[in-house]
Length: 258
Image (cartoon, rainbow, N blue to C red):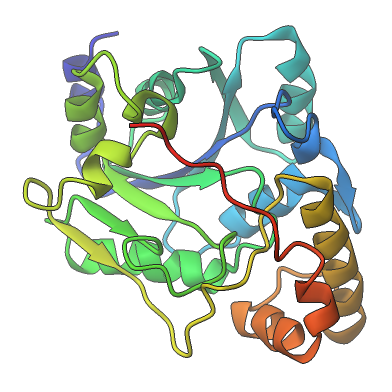
């Protein structure tokens, strides 16, 4: 289906879907999204937070057509959400498939390796766009103030279609790269919090990240129940436990090659 056909399928009333990109073949930590964290898989944590977000109409997992992502497909469906599949490395193409099969005016992009999403933060992102639907892009990363691992980006579907007209570039893998790095063309806004906590890392990319998340979830569950957890509770625990922060403080985020 052509991008223009996707836009013709969009509903007459504003619809926002969450699209969670997930794959089993991580280069640094294969199978990470299927690991069991507390009572759920890492992917299960992300799905639960997305489904609990006010203002969201649907949740879709976008995985690859590779055989090793059959398990990702099965796990997502076990949690009651629909799945679309597409090219392994062309993640933007997967998002377009999601928009074709589940039409929406805007989509929230989440990655499946960020299990501690706070539905209240996601609702802020969605709510900002619903209040100002002329915005092309709303995110927690335009000016990062939350820990890495609370990354959420909303983008209008026509903007994704516009990006798809460029056949090559970092946006094919990183989806919103061309939007967030072109604020002169696109109307962008960000959700920020105070006090800043962008020095912290609660995403999953290495075994050291896993050690932190496992310890963090154990302690947060003891204090606050099974989750999802409020971002302030996550930050408060980390500020009180520098020994936990030290577990993955040395991990460097992989850079995007433009």
